[in-house]
Length: 269
Image 1 (tube, rainbow, N blue to C red):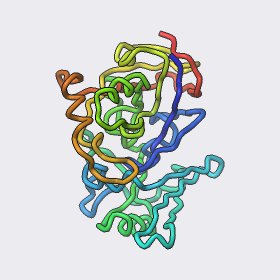
Image 2 (tube, helix red, strand yellow; image 1 turned 135 degrees about the vertical axis):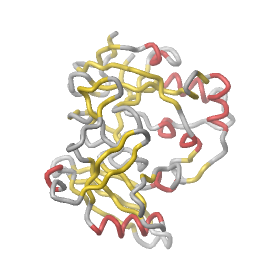
Image 3 (cartoon, rainbow, N blue to C red; image 1 turned 90 degrees about the horizontal axis):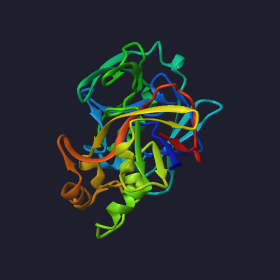
Image 4 (cartoon, helix red, strand yellow; image 1 turned 90 degrees about the vertical axis):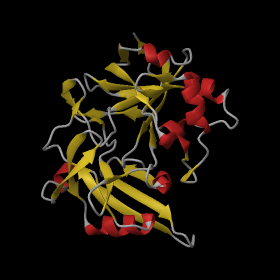
């Protein structure tokens, strides 16, 4: 198998960015899920509550370490844009906030008020942006030496093209890979061969997979329209990919040596 796609999602639940090379730091893929949207009560907001988040565009200037967010205003006369620093030192003096990300109590740093105005207009509800703080370590489950950002449960999600092809054969309407928001897409193996990966190399990187990824209602959200579609993908997956712990599609993993991964890299078990 080889790597056919690499993706990061700078803002949790917003649009992703396709890469040719994926770099890593102590929290996983560089710039992945470093920002998160929260509501007026400091609770995380994702596509589950706000499907329209899937339409929030992201773009990174890697030289400046700057993120640009954009969306089309409802009157479609102008594109609203916001630029945010992705340098950790630019947030260290900001007010911190505790936020629950599933089972983990994590710490975020408030972004400037301009981000609150931008998000509140986009979502049409009070919302703020926070940047991940490394003051409180959030370890990978059962791997205390490796940290995580605002991801749900693992630094990396790995899915093969063949697994999606297998699913699409069973659906009335085919889906694209962005519906499942992977970080690493593989090709050249059998459907669900990623399930069998445990410890393996991708190029110079050493990866460890530690669980299958359970899927939720988010896979029913049209990523282009920002709307919930029918429950067919989840219903069909449930018919043949149901295991103890949920409906599984893709595997959770982390990079044990922080070496970069490139498109075209081979998987070596």
